[in-house]
Every structure is written in structure tokens, then in C-alpha cells.
Image (cartoon, rainbow over all chains, first blue to last red; front, top):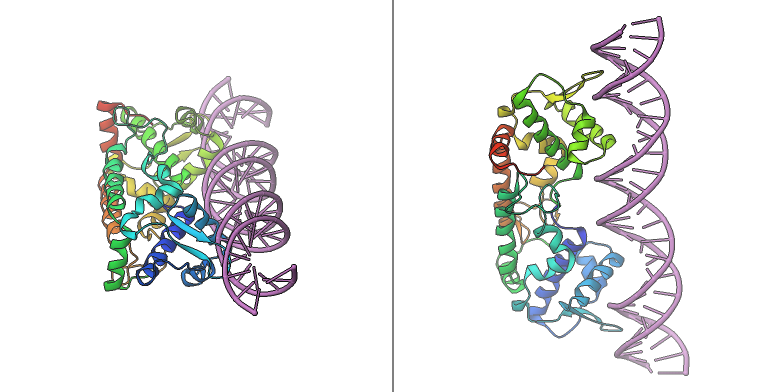
Length: 144
Length: 144
DNA sequence: AAGATTTAAGAGTCTCTTGTCATAAATACT
DNA sequence: AGTATTTATGACAAGAGACTCTTAAATCTT
């Protein structure tokens, strides 16, 4: 698995919140509601969303009508930001064989190919905003 | 991390043994020696190589002058075979978001891009034989 | 002010992978 | 035959990540 569970839940939750923010970007969505929709543990999701609020990707608000919302326009939030908040260096600075100090001039046997593939993926994440995905979601209705 | 530690050690060990088999493909290399060269735990490596011998990628022999050797010419062993022995389906059948039943006609938001990247990687592993890498190793002397 | 709602924070548990070890089995050598 | 060498097997320990729960803090409503 490329991403940690936390990162995965983080992405899915961010997408859900971004979709909801299309209709109303000011109000907060309770974490309990997100957890139910994504079918993940409320307790765990709470922890995970704290990571995103600390990274200033989301904002939270306590009390009645509280919850979380995106901290910025979803046009300005890219997948890489979310991935970074959880485990970016683990993915994109990594050697496929886990060898320390693997780099262009001292490569592991899989260095070249992995560099190519992960670079390509990294670009996708750098270029894909939440807004882009929510628009696709409108057309395509993909699963979350 | 894309691969499990076991898979990583398996690949590295197979490469080392394949390199040694260039000079002498009949004799067995003691696991203890491999473990020292790769700087991994002998005990753990023993377990891991059992997976490769059960998959008939390597052969083992007990007693003095025992050890492991490749079960076939390294021209005929592809990285995908080794990966498969450990955790193939975990990598190449996977949805990046871990969603069950994610597929072309019911995709997750990252399905298309991940399919492309992992397909490309999968092809590399399907086409890269141990022999090819050992030849590169002769030229390049990459790290293991 | 009191009670209800909702996130924050920290401690604790579960599970799976990683890693260790002791013992058994096979083989070679003398 | 006996001993040394080496892999096989199964039990076990350690660590990390995933997940749960309890209590605290903030906010709203009445």
C-alpha cells in the first residue's frame, strides 16, 4: 500500500468536505457525519482530521453547529498538500528497496524506474486540486 | 512503502545470488553470507528465502557447502515473480484509496492515474529479468 | 448558570509485520 | 558412528500502525 490509512482517510474526508463546500463553504460539517458517510471510525477520523487542521488545510469549530470545513478555496488545495501532511517523504523521497542514500549517482537497481513512476505520480498530485476532483465527481459520481 | 520488508529483502537477496551465479551457478551460497553482505538479520533472511524456495525461485541445500542458489537461469526469472511470491496482489490489484470494488466502471477519484502508474511499474517488473539487472550491476556497480 | 453538542488531547488496546531464538532435520567429513 | 555445518520449522518478542475510549475544552441554547 502506497499511502497510510490515515492519509487515505484524510484524502477521502477532504474530498467529501470539499464537495459539501460547493453548496455552502461557510458552515462546518460534523466529523461524526463524515465518518458515517465514509464508513470509518469516528474516533479515528477525529484524530486524522486534527492533522489536517494543524496543517491549516481544514478549520475546526467546537460546539453545536461545529465540525470541520476547508480552510481555503478547494481550487487552492492540491492532493500533494494532504499527502504531505501525512506521509509525503515516506512516498516520494523513498527508495523502492528502502536503501539509505540511494540517489542518481549511487542508485539501487530499481532507482531509475521507480524515480520515473513516482515522479509521474507526484506530478499528478501536485497538479490535482480538490476543486478539479469535485467537478469530476459531479459528472462521474465516483465512489468515496 | 510500496513493498513489504520481506519482499525487499527477497529481491536484494535474489540479486546477490544471481550475481554470484554468474561465476558459478551450481554451488550454494550460505544464507549467513548473504545476510552479512546485505546487512540484514540472518534469522529473518532465512525465513524470507524459504518463501522463495517454496515458490521454486531458489533451491536450498542443507549441511556443509549448503545454502541457496537460483532454481533457474537468471534470464528466466523476472522481478514480478519475486514480488508475486511476497505481495503482488497487495500492490497491483490495489486501489490507491483502499476502496473495495474500485474498478474502471466504478472508480475512485484517483483510479485513472494510479492505474496508469502502477501499470507502467508492473510492466517494468514483468520485463526485467534478474539477468538484465546483474548485467547492469557489472557496468554500474549499484548498491544492494 | 446549566446542560447539550462538538472538537482536542492523551492514554490505552489490538493487530500485523518484523525480527529473534531454540530445536529439529539433512548433509558432509573424518 | 560422531561431529560440525547448514537449512527448516514453529514459538515467541518487539515495534509500528490502526483503532478505541475517556476526559477536557469550547461553544451554543435555554
